[in-house]
Length: 259
Image 1 (cartoon, rainbow, N blue to C red):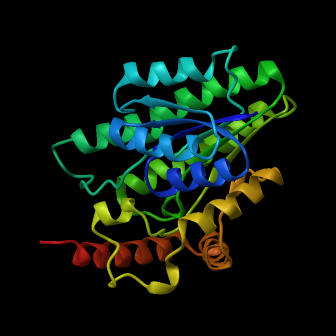
Image 2 (cartoon, rainbow, N blue to C red):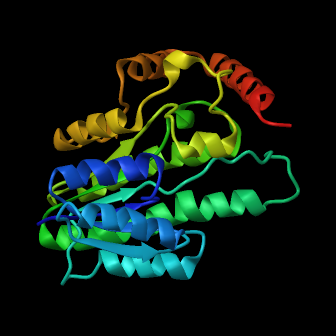
């Protein structure tokens, strides 16, 4: 049976990927920081007959990233699908003198994505098959600070990776979700009613759409008609207009954060 490795696998989009893949008969390697939650999730899937391995790892720790990369390149235990999902909101100002939040974001959502995608891509290319999904964001299409910049990098990096993997039997896809009702937004303080209700997506429905796009060989997946339409508008809008919309969204988000 094929095996998928999912980072950030105990909540949100990562957990939705694990659920969807388990339903499809995939075995799982679950990666996250919280060992108790990892074991709880693993027990659930083992109870359904799936083989599940847990890897406790903090992807801001380069030694932990190396351990996960080594697992991806283990020829004796091939991973056919990598989902790079681990991430978090970055609320720190670009003008802040304290770069700790930006440094951690870079380690988890840029460097770890590159290292793990590279490890998976090499191993998969040697076998002639495999798929990589890097979770970006529609925020990468606008200009809401460090998080937008990081997610823009994820999409462009994945497009470049797809080019390098062309002809190897391995595909790479950037998933660009919009607002999804998960712990991610709750932790960021932006899951309240002050944000437009029509823009919220369900994590399980989003993952089902993403897996369909993955099976079709799409390089960029933007689930839901509403976000496809919004991204089309953004692609053709003047950048000055995109910046104005981004400022308005940033102001609205800031006003919704707890004091």
